[in-house]
Amino acid sequence: MITPDSPDRQYSTRLRTALVLTGSGTSGAYHAGVLRALHEAGVKIDLVAGRGAGTIGALFAAVDGGARLWEDKGLWRSASAATFYGWRAPLRVAGWALVVAAVVFAIPLALLAVAVMVGVVGLVLTLVGLGGSGAVLTGGFSRWVEAQFDPAALPTVIPRLVLFALLVGVAALGVGVTLESVRARVRRRTRRGLLWRLIGAPLSSRAIVERSATELWNLIRGAAPVAAPPPGELAKKYVELLADNLGQPGFREVLVTVHDMDGRRDLVFAMLGAAHRPRFFGRPGAAGTAPRVPGTPSPTKAPMGTTRWNGWPAANGATARWAPWAAPTVAATKAPSPA
Image (cartoon, rainbow, N blue to C red; front, side):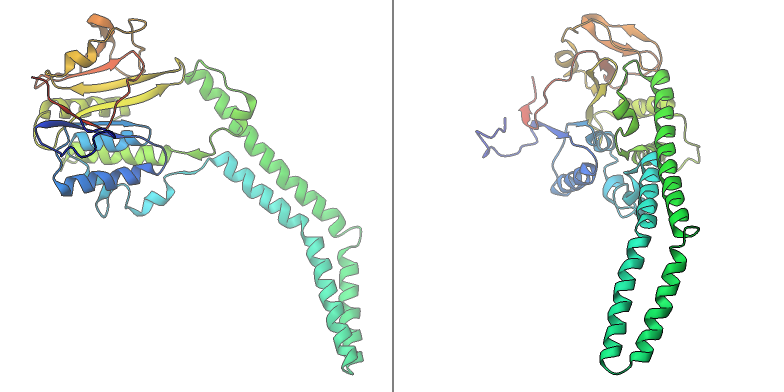
C-alpha cells in the first residue's frame, strides 16, 4: 500500500487503484485535470470515489466519460463554465439596489467636489488676469448649484430615490426568505434560522448541476436523439449503463457520498463488483434501515443493514446500493486485490 510512510512503492497494474475526488466549487476543474493527467499517463483506475464537487468527476469517470470534463467543449472548458456559480437572485438584486442607493446618495457630495474644482479654476483665471472669465464661470456654476439644492429639487428627490432603492433590496431579500420557507416546508424537516434564510449560501450551484446532468445524459444516450429524462429516470439509466459494463475498459467501480441534511449524516452510494461487494456492504447499519429517497423506487430490506433499490438491475455481478451508515474514510491508496 502506498502511504506517506512508504512513498517509494511503485505503481503496478496488479494493485487495485482508487482515486478519491473531494472539494467544493471550482475544485471540479482541478479534478478534470487530474483525470486527464492520469489518463494520459496510462494509470489504470479501478475505483473512483467522490464527494462534493468530486461527485461530478467520479460519475463521469466511472462510465468512461472523463474526456467530457476536459475536452475543448467539455464541462469545465466551455464558455458557460464562468457562470456555474452565480450569486443567488435575491442577493444579486439586493446588491444592485444597495449600489444604486449609494450612487444616488453620493450625488450631493460629487456636486460639492465639482464646486471646489470650479472655484479653484476661477481663482487661477483671476490670478492670470482673466478675472472676468473667472467670475462668469464661478457665478454661473453657483447659480446652477443653488437651483439643484432648492428644497424642491435634490433635497427632496435624493432621499426618495435612496429609500426606494433600499426598499427594493429589502423586498428582494423578503421574497428570498419566503421562497426558502416554502421550499423548506416541502423538502426539509430541519428548520433553519432567520439569518440563514435571509442570506443563506450566497452562491447558487443550480447551473453546474443542470449542465452536469445534461452532459451526463448526452454521454448515456450517445447519438440517439432522445430528450433528457427527469432526474430520477436519469439516475436509473446511469445505473443500468454502469451495471451492464462494469469490468469493461474505461468503466470503473464508483462510490459517491452525499450529506443528508434531515438525518444529519452521510449517505453512500456504491456500485462494486461481486469480489469486493461483501466486504463493503457487510457492515451492519447503525439503525438497520436506509432513508427513502423521493422519486426512487421503494427499497427492499437486504441483510446486514443495507438497502437495495428495486428496479435497478445488477449485471456483471454488480450491485448498486445505498449504505445507511455514515461514510467510511476512503484513502487514495493502492491496495492489493484480494484473492
